[in-house]
Image 1 (spheres, rainbow, N blue to C red):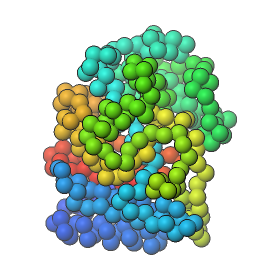
Image 2 (image 1 turned 135 degrees about the horizontal axis):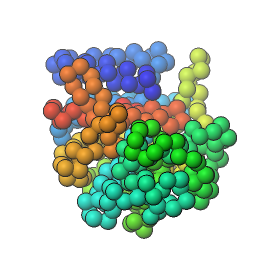
Image 3 (image 1 turned 30 degrees about the vertical axis):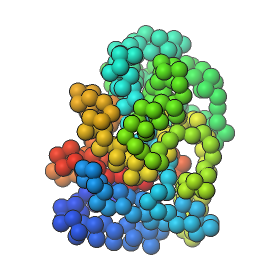
Image 4 (image 1 turned 90 degrees about the vertical axis):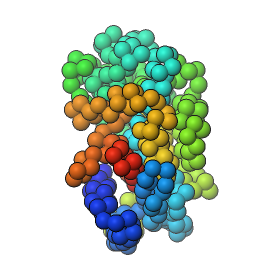
Length: 324
């Protein structure tokens, strides 16, 4: 992930040049990384409604030499959290949920549930342990999977790490629970809500949540790790474990359209966006801030299996960048 953010930093720095010069430098740099076995993936840069750069590097199925292109789909990991936070704010605006609502309404067995609010989950200030990293025994569940009921029971067994609202601690559990809340309120699946509330509303073409295994016939990419000799396929996880915390599949094209649509008020109101981007202890509501020189991008990064993704938006220039 650090490598991806470094690449992101270098790319945004390149945008100080003229547009044509910037594109040439960016393309040259990413080709160099791919040719030296340091990177495979796709990049999109969007200004306003116009895509000014779009290219893919490497393979989505390396064993058969199938090259990636602009429509190759990748798992985007925790960039999913921005989508989940947006759907929660849509429910708040529809008056179906309040940020102050305590999660005891949905999860009475969780420690301190009477004191943890939806807002605490969004801002990663709940004090609930991260189920992904809670103990080594859970690592095998990433591949084999675990039922929703068993995972919620596991979460209910955790002791509170700190008093809700008093500290920040990044925890995938917070956004897993938010996904459950979305389903509970709407009586629809997370996948259905994603499609109805975001994908169809702004015309995303390659964004969805699925628990199916990777299907290369749909141009879905495997994740890879360079082993010193060749690109080796990384073990595939059970996507139901990531769920609303990190389970969405998308393209950089769709990610830039999503983040720009969010900030342009096409998904939630300006006041909701202002709430989401209010950063405290490094985190807002499904948003982080990436400072690169004078630019301050809002967005999120993500890692799942050996996929890495990052999306950022710079409001002043209506500039969005996504790399995966």
